[in-house]
Image 1 (cartoon, helix red, strand yellow):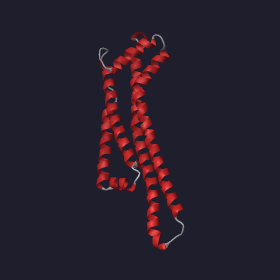
Image 2 (image 1 turned 90 degrees about the horizontal axis):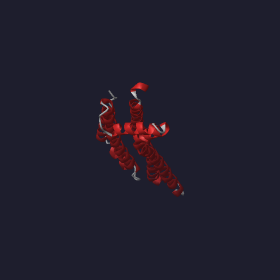
Image 3 (image 1 turned 135 degrees about the horizontal axis):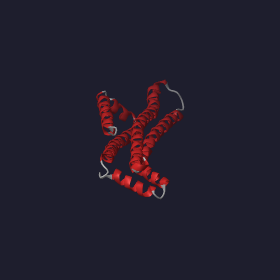
Image 4 (image 1 turned 180 degrees about the vertical axis):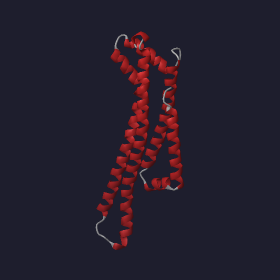
Amino acid sequence: MPEPLWLEWLLLGGLLAFAVWLLGTRGVWALLLHADPTGLTLVIVVLFSGATLWCGARARTLQREHVALRRTTSACGPARAWWADYRTVATHDADAAIELLVERTHGPHAAAWWVNGIQLKLGLLGKVIGFSMLALEIGRTTSFDPSQSQALLRSLTAGLGVALLTTMVGLVANILLGLQLTRLDRYADRLLADIQRAAIPEGDA
């Protein structure tokens, strides 16, 4: 039987949901959102949540198609259609048939990998904005007044907080989503190999 990809994602989703709840009870989410006036942290969290749900739906689809492919030759579904198209195209051009299979099994992941890269870039953008805020505050300081040191330190740490927090959230989201997408790619590789194996006539196996 195919690997339980859907159950693996449910386990990961449960762990993520527990982590979200735990961080919420400790006030971490409120701290992160309050410390980031740019809103980039919220954007990264929303992107990660949406991409994670998409990975769950994709994992369920791939597992269903893998199961349907292995049942009987009369089973229907996209994987069976891919198998039939592969056999048809392979009689004329084997390389084109493989490219067709790769596009159909791995194509949807391309956009998700792009979103994964965007998360990291948003974190780096927050870092640039935070250090820019820090530099602007330092540039505005013409003289050091001990009576204003507390307000100055507050302004400086605000920019530094934006730089560090957005970078941290972007990196964590990039790692977690990359883990899910890598697992999807590996499962799609297995599905592609099984489609190719099923398309080989029994006499040639």
